[in-house]
Image (tube, rainbow, N blue to C red; front, side, top):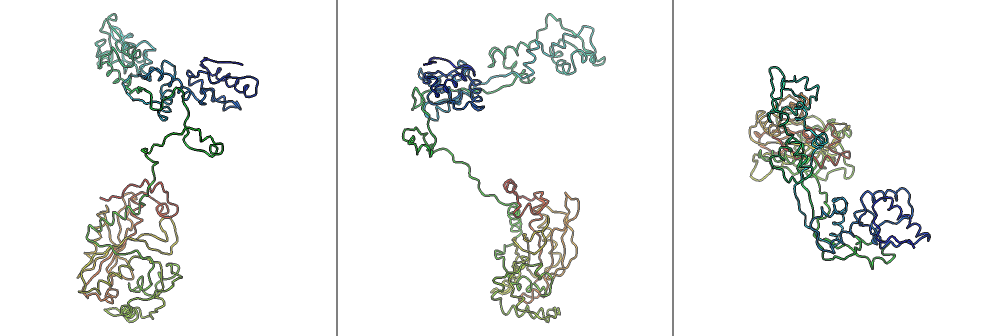
Length: 571
């Protein structure tokens, strides 16, 4: 039998020897009494070297340490800490780490946390200030002189030119040392002649800062040094103030002289072998916080939409119900006085529904008035002089604009009991168009629409509403250009100045609804309706500096960008 009782493992070589003995013991070439091995003094370097040796190919080697099977120096130090607690509380963990030659944070504190988790020990965390020399401070001690003393030693009573001093001791040394020489009245500086001369007796000059640095190196807590001296060293960046932490350690409620490793969970292997019956398990901490759960995030479009809603409601607008995406061609086109032969009604521009392909009904009296307006005209118009087909009007489609809802709201406004009352409506919702997709166009997007229905409105009122809205979202430079829309006359395109692109860009469309659209609804003759619209995507792209619309909306969207997008706020 080969016994290692009482041995202290201090280096990697001894650790490797023990591992080798274990291998021999396994092969029945030797026997080894591991239980009595004292590994309390295993250094971190030794443990690390041993672990590296096992990784590099020491097959079959068990871990060095007590019976619990510790694999590193921190685990091995658990036994030492328990032994110390057996004699009473530990007053200062730093002193204990120094006494056993182990790293305080990586070894002792890790061992303490292991014991605390198993309730073998309790601790009280304390702090105190220490002062550490900087690299420059340590270099001064190594050199034996401060820069001011180095400079002083080359000065003469007659004076030395600044350029010569820089050549002798270096420009940096002159820059640092000249000030203290002047402050200590060791030298004087003749700026007119660019010379520095010695005025103090060399025998009376004491390198005080050097002595302070030596004292601080000998006593990191600064004993024997005045506060102003330490502050002076910190100001010159020769030292730094840091917090040191230590622990007062006492026995815990589950203290025992030997540590039994506690399992965190039951494994399949433990169930199959029955080990779980005798195993010690860690107690559940029901007060601990759970893992953070990622919540939902508002899409940038929704953030801008919320801000637009706030602005429009602040202007006195009421939101329209736009939650129905499927509309009939009658409400989407015919009620707006858009001809049934218009190119926008072709399949290459509009998504038509296959099932159900047709709507069931529309208001019959209103339908007949719209049909007559298209075929024969009225209210100052000659109409389109074409046959109005019901099968075309009843086709179902994905709405191409939210103006289909505007038409329904205006019809209800005209038919309400008590007659017409002025209203201001808005909507922000999704619309669909069969367009070629690129970095600025998608087949589905969001339309912002606002309208005002009141008596005797004019183009001036429309421009005023548009200016009020766009100024609220920070676009103050506006231009208006005449345009054509099937259901508004006059019509205007709205342009805004883009401060990033340094150019004017189209930001919306607007106009006054035609009498051919309003009269069949039953609105009074002197009621005018002004309206404007824009996409939600374009201002959102400008707000968040997004150049490709597919990076904003669709399957290519970066979820991380959605999470990090700030709230949308407009001046």
